[in-house]
Length: 179
Length: 179
Image 1 (cartoon, one colour):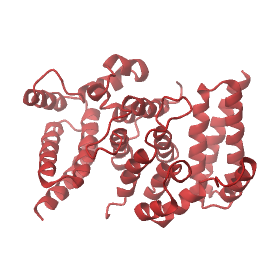
Image 2 (image 1 turned 135 degrees about the vertical axis):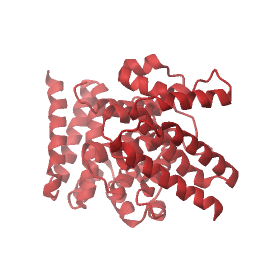
Image 3 (image 1 turned 135 degrees about the horizontal axis):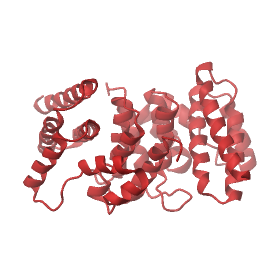
Image 4 (image 1 turned 180 degrees about the vertical axis):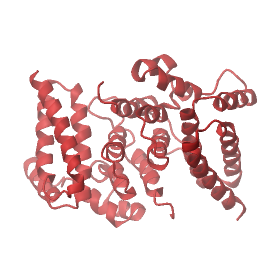
């Protein structure tokens, strides 16, 4: 594959097949729309054009939520994308609280690209919560803050603006809870 | 909606719901992956960041291939996006040859944004044909040339590079037919 963007287009088709039949919390929107949105946040809102980052954004939920494993990702998209997707995947063998704590620890020391991808995930999930009841919205926003704090350190200076974008979005959504 | 990008994210969810259950020609990849790829071509390969163009890319097949009509698009995405999607829609009431001829006539005088969107559609469909048998590939590439010729005039100077990108892709795929 000599075209560096080929993995992005292959990842779009791969994600659409892997998440086929899954729905978002509204129980009517196909789940794959979330991973498309995360890719669009990375490219269009945050401004990163690295094809490996875009592919990893599209694939970020495949190991956790589909039958795809790390080797599948490596085979189709290479070891770097597989490593990033792995770092974005929670350990389903652990009970909830231990799983979240371990996930935060991994995110804190992950490559900066993983941190940016997690911020894009937070950006989209937080935006989605507008349609939730106040309790669900409160929970989602608290989780968003938890992940934001987990990735905050170690983000290079030229990606600090990404943290500022996500901070502003969370602040706006939090304000809508009390208004 | 004060965030100008809100229509892009809404269009991703809208397209995923509208095309739910539809598959590409390989009969295993969800159709919506095509419209997301066209949006990614417009943003990432061609370099346009106008949210109305990105939304129209995502919605370009909804009137033609789903139960969505022009009024639905206007209501959710405004009259400009609806006009562009309309110009990208073939008239299903006409027999094949008349329909294609009328489609080419509309594309030839459409807004330049519509031409760029059609070029992104051609770019993705042409790329997809790599997995087709020689006959299918030949047909797809001939159709791609037909659309390219239809939109060629009236593209502003700063979008000429887009025509060059699509020309190069078609030439490469055509070469693979004879090699």
